[in-house]
Image 1 (cartoon, rainbow, N blue to C red):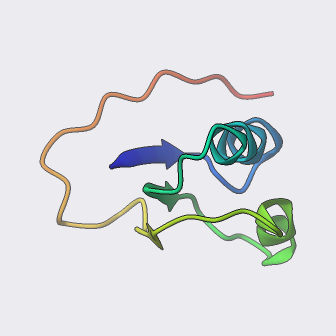
Image 2 (spheres, rainbow, N blue to C red):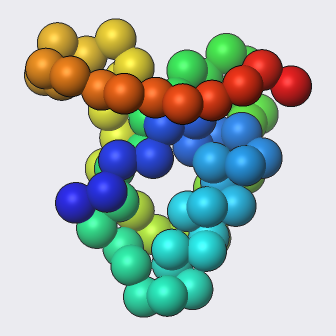
Length: 68
């Protein structure tokens, strides 16, 4: 199972599309949906599920990212 954080943004959604192009669909996406429009970035993508970034089910997550 692969967790993609920031999945609704441009880079995250492109990474999900890349994984799908390699046949990978066991993906969990995670992101804040501020306005709902960003979800369109994942149109046509296949993923197993969604987890909210504030979920209590995650014990540890190391996220390396930048604000653009």
